[in-house]
Length: 253
Ligand SMILES: NC(=O)c1ccc[n+]([C@@H]2O[C@H](COP(=O)([O-])OP(=O)(O)OC[C@H]3O[C@@H](n4cnc5c(N)ncnc54)[C@H](O)[C@@H]3O)[C@@H](O)[C@H]2O)c1
Image (cartoon, rainbow, N blue to C red; front, side):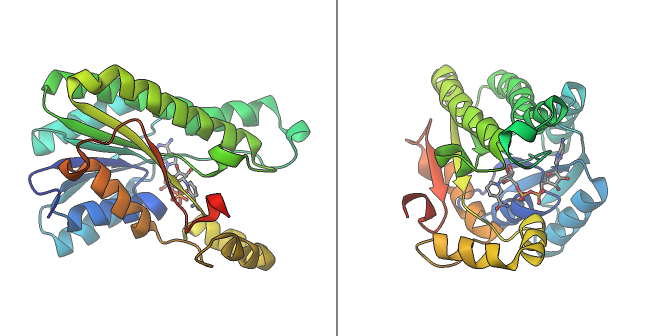
């Protein structure tokens, strides 16, 4: 139980990778605040966790592009669980796909808002709250392998994730003296609702992406959760400022 006595918050935990992360954290002994724009899916995930680990999970509906909602999310976590040790900033979304010359400025701004700026807004409020608590803490930002090698026809999302990686390292430098560690986890292709939908529309993409991994498959959300759990726990006490891929080796293939 590497997270026994810890309180964790996971954003975008109503489905997909965030849901998998929240479930792994709860299975490792943490109390978990499930945050999502979709309040119903957040409630459903919290209910599932509580059926396995009674009184472990609470949920909170928030649009993380709104700084006031982020402050309320932190307040709700502190009043539910009295403290906050571990944060996973997972929520992100991309608007617009296609060649770079076809993007509208609105799509670029929306993608930056949903993937980079909202994460920065979260970090701003989170770091302040963690410093005020003055206890050791760990933060994990969910990035993407697209940040490492680029992503054709999803270039603005990839660039936003590259900014997430760099922000992770800068903030890790700023808060190390406060005993706060900050890392990023970079998933390859993971079995999530969006990816399943994409594979239904483009069956050849499934085969291509499976082959791009050394392990010849895509990953499961819980496989991201395992590394996040380790990085949020005291077992990773000497790791900060790192961007670590969980991708079946696709980033070196
Ligand atoms: N699925 C993949 O293969 C993959 C690969 C690399 C990186 N990622 C990253 O992993 C993370 C999770 O991806 P996913 O595929 O599980 O996504 P998803 O779309 O399945 O789930 C994202 C969740 O975040 C919530 N959300 C979106 N915008 C929000 C906002 N403004 N405020 C609050 N909640 C919001 C959504 O309601 C949803 O429940 C993202 O950061 C994504 O960029 C995913």
